[in-house]
Image 1 (cartoon, rainbow, N blue to C red):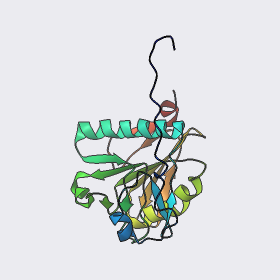
Image 2: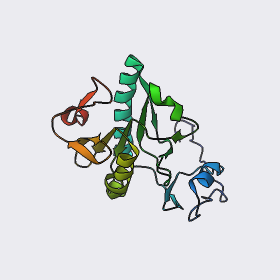
Image 3: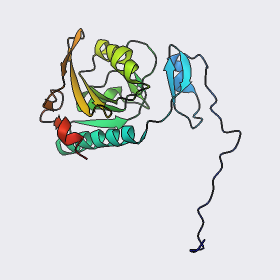
Length: 196
């Protein structure tokens, strides 16, 4: 090398493998597991390795999270977090939304994890999670009282805003400027959001 500098090569030890793939757990057992350095989803009580999203997924999660965080810092009405386990009151498997927002009056549901329904959830769609995010996951969010569900679709370059109607149905908006009813004054336009 001309510069005389070489990047170190780091090899993970062969013993560093996921410990919990295929393990059947209750949600209480899941919360008591020691960290092994890997992300998991629990699907019908069975641990499954959860691969990280691609570059576009990560970028759009960061973009949306930044917009939300700037809004919340200015207004001081709640907190936003990314990739934190949520245990909805329905007793089902833990979920890990891309972004969760909890308004100040509801911050009591925040412990090590979120134990209850966040006020707002955002999911960045990927081909491997699209059906689950828009199906079973959305149904659980609705029934548990999540007030708003923002859906960012990098492939289609679209935003959707689903607003909870008395835990029975979602009022869905996907055109023009999307305006939050949970966060007064917060709005996004898909054309601007995907402009880069």
